[in-house]
Image (tube, rainbow, N blue to C red; front, side):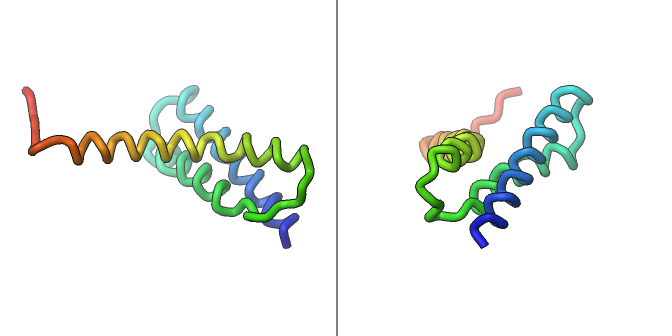
Length: 92
């Protein structure tokens, strides 16, 4: 079962990489814009929590978790900026 989760996680990661490339190379598309972060998030959650102690699997896990950690950091920084503000600040 862990092998299937690892395989699906790698497929989702490569799907996210392709959609990120497609978003940058072909221009903006809302479908690609939504699928890209969702595939990285899904790849993170599909990875088995207690994988075998293989150095190769540990390296793959670090690579797959990197985009998720970047997305999580961006969302949390946006959330903290929104919390620190005292109200809407709209400049025209």
